[in-house]
Amino acid sequence: MKQLFTFSILLFSVTLFAQSPRTVLFEMSESVWTPASVEAICAKEDLRSTYGNDIAIIGYHPDNIQNGGDPMYNTISSQWADIFGVNQFGRASIDRVSYNGTSITALGISNWSDTIAARINRPAVGEVTLPELLVDPNTDEIYARVHMNFTKDVIELKDFRIFCYLVEDGKVEIQLVDTNLLTGCSLFNDTLDTAFAFAHNDVVKRNPSTYEGTDNIIPNEVHEGDYYTTAYTMSIPSGVNIDDLRVVAFVADFNTSDITSNVVINAIGSNDFTEYDSGDETDPNHPNNPDNPNSIMNPANWPTAIQEIRNDPFEITVSPMPISDLGIVSFELPSKQTVEVSLYSIDGVKVRSVYRQQLAAGLQKAAILKGDLPAGIYLLNVDGENVKASHRIVIL
Image 1 (cartoon, helix red, strand yellow):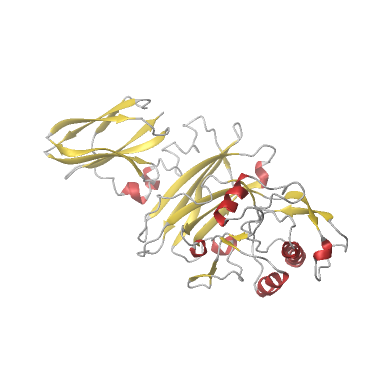
Image 2: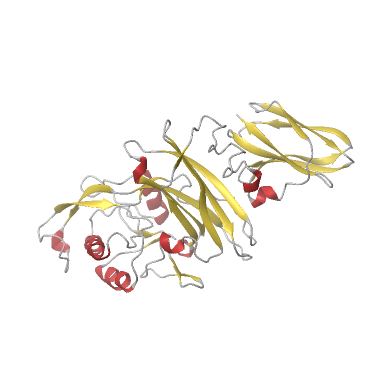
C-alpha cells in the first residue's frame, strides 16, 4: 500500500495506456524538482486530455523545498514522508494491488493498481460502506462511520486496519515546470521555469485514522458474516465548501515491517452528506439516537464483537447516568459463579476489565471509575457461567 517509487514518462505511457481508464482514488501534489516528476505531470495531463479525469493518479508527493514550499504541503504529507523515510521529496504508492476478477495480487513498482471505482462492491473478502456520513452545518462538524462486512472467512493471520480521509476536489494551485527538462511533451511551451495552474482532485485535508490506520477494531481472523465498524469526527477545513469535499475510506491488510506487503481489501468514497444537529441526540439522523436505523446505537448495527456479548435480557442498573466521575453497577446473580465485568467501546474493543472473581448468589455491585476514559458511549458487559448481558452507559 505504501512504497517509494520514481515515475518516468515510460512508466506512464506503457502502464496507463495499456489499461482502461480509471477513476482517481488519490491525487496528491506534484511540485517539480526532478526531470522524472516534470515528465509525470506532463504524462498525466496528456492522458487527462485523452481520457478526461477518469484516470488513475495514485501517488503522494511530499515536497517542501521547491520555490518556498509545495503549495499543498501540510502535516499529513510530513507524516507520509516519515513513514517513507523521505526528508526532501519523493513519491509513494498508497495501494499496490491488482484484481483480475478472481484474486488480489500485490504488484511491483512498475505497475499501477486498482482504484476506488474498481473496488467498490467488487468480489473480495469483504465490503466497505459508509452507513453514516453526516455534516452539522452549524458547527461544520463531519461524522463518518466506516463499516466492513466480511463475505468470506479469513483464517490466515492478518492485521486489518481501517483508513479514513477527508479529501477536497477541484483544488487549483500554481506550480513551476522547467519545460526544458521535458521530452516529447506537447502540452507546455519550451521555456524555462513556466508557472502553470493545475487542478488537483482528492487532496487530503483530514486524516482522522492517521496514516497507519485504525488498529484493534478488526481481529486477526474473521469469519463470513462478521462485521466491524468505527466512526470518525472531523471539521470542515476553513474556506472549503462542503460541496468540494468527500470521504474516502478503505480497509487494508497492514504490514508494519514491510510496506510493500500492504494490500487494500476494499474501499468506498462518497460525498453524499446528510445534515444533522450534533447537539441534539433526538435528531433522527444523530449517531447516538438508538431509533436511527443507521446508528451504531441501534442494536441491529452492533458489530460482531459486541453481538457476541449479547444474550437474554438480564437486568443491569447503572447510577448515576451519565457517569461523570464514578458510577455504580448493580445486578442480581441467580447462583454462585465466576463473573467478569468489562467495559467495551462501541467499536467492540475492550477498554477496561473491572474485575473477574467468584461471586455469591444475590445482589452484586461494581464501581466504574471514569479515570482516563474519553467521553463517549460504552457497553458494560457482565459475563458469568449462566449470565451474559450488556448495558449501554454514557461517560461524560
